[in-house]
Image 1 (cartoon, rainbow, N blue to C red):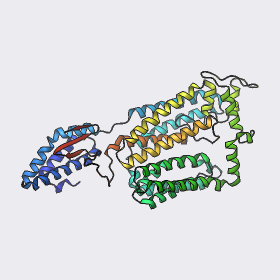
Image 2: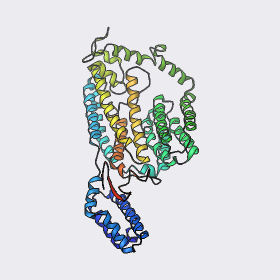
Image 3: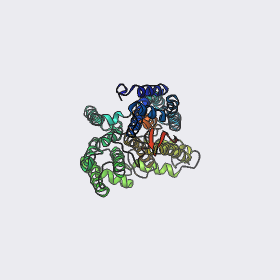
Image 4: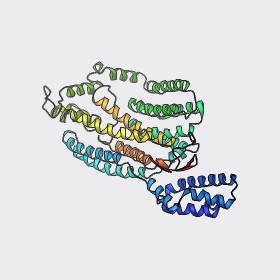
Length: 462
């Protein structure tokens, strides 16, 4: 907004309001709203026969004392972290380190791995705060650069890592749903062509999973949720029935990619996933071990001895006890109460995040937060399912709990970005924003039926 082009009295009024608002990010949108309202009121008074100077004076007078207005807006628009989410995040991080400490005697190189996890935890905290103070609207400003830049980085990592390339790109791929949210934001006014292009776009990361069923499923479900939410809210301006058909076709294409890439191996793997007894000493071995351990677990305390093994030696049956199958280990070691507590803490995080996501006023804030929540939730659900033996998929991580530096840093980055949305999302508006019923719920200063309304979040001063 260019204040120098306004009459001096309006400029002075806006400057007085600005000086009361300490958060610089809030100053521009607040002053723009006030300026627009004063201009509208001035024009209304001009149409009633007042001269320019009198119209300006009356418009400013109706706004009220600039210092009082500025102080009210300053209190309403301060960057506030969402403390419940921060507390839950900190709890999960500390709990994860505590669990790794107790697990270390039962896993090879446990002491060394615990030390590395502490180091990664420190790095992840720095990454989270960096993402927290990042302006998340950059995802909407440069969606193509971010999305295709991430595609390029992932492809380079895939090509350069040799035999380890199957796992080297996994945690980069967890960032794709968030980047995809920006792509959907850019294409949301594109109608059917925009919807189809978005479907084509999330085929790209799925093709880079190298046949990893878990990652393919996570990206598919996250991106599908984002697209479905955009369609339901009418942002693509298409007929919902036809849009649903397009999404179904895109889903079939995406889910067929791993089958086409893995060929017979993938079909054989899926058969064993659905029925582990087909290969009890091979790929179905883990499922058999999980079933044995869980069947001997108790509600609280160490599981019952397994015939032929000592109490703790039974855990030696389970590989990756601190990574892929940590929850199975904890259930047998400490009881089913661990599962109840795990579900409770993750459910609290997810439900709190969903509540805040639904309150987002901007399309971008909603899409980005939905993308992160779906990525986080899919990891959790897939991990729970695998560790309970429901469906034998290779889990990624139990976010912030299981061992793994790259997983920890990636998830903490996503949580930091999520907190950034909830911290500043109230000030983000979309360029094509439209008001409903004459009153725009996201505007700070409004005029309706001869009344000035200052919208202070859940309170209004008239």
